[in-house]
Image (cartoon, rainbow, N blue to C red; front, side, top):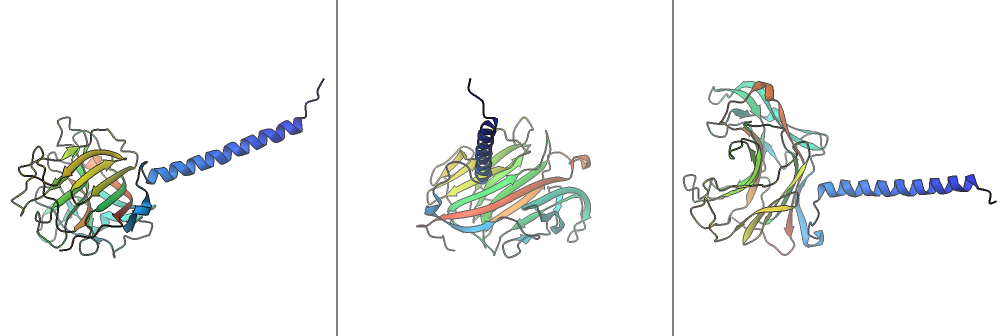
Length: 297
């Protein structure tokens, strides 16, 4: 009868356990890496990183961004103030809260405040790939929260420079009153010449508002492409007319600066009990193909 060597068995067991642990560590490292870059991102050897903010500092980088104290139109329910923009745990945070505040330029009282920052006169881009990892504000049916990441022409009037909505989340633009994501392009000669009439494209998939999502926008000489988590859901091509537009697409001829904000839409009165709400931006990265050139004013 063969005698079992328990020391040998124990050694083999520990060795297998150790190899399994190493495999798990490598697996979770892979998952962490994959969470910041969706599968299928083109080989980066063909791209230059031309703008990056990982929001790791204790303050917003004012060499890249300007916090605004302002309103945006007469119908939004919030006032934008600098105090609702900050960094925390490697994220840019946009807070929307019940915070009755008088706008000192008009004397109007706003019951809610939120944040707006942009890169105007500090950074703009033309063509390339825009990528952001974002956790959206938690919301519910018929909630007026309206977060957005968008661009407009730098140093030129709206709409002459175009407007690219990389994403907007709104509960008022679909009949179910649930929050949905949209990608949109507005263009025209001036503010009264908007060729887009509700022409945004709804992202067809549901998303978990407890998780981060990767928003990507590709721009080349002939078209725009919108992606969420690697899923292409909208394309606009130069010279093509799409539903709910009154003219063929004309791509921008002006560099775009970035805007990050979270508004409160006016279709229903915001409820104090539903706030504060937060939008978290883990990073923004912009790439340009190595053989491409910037559009110049």
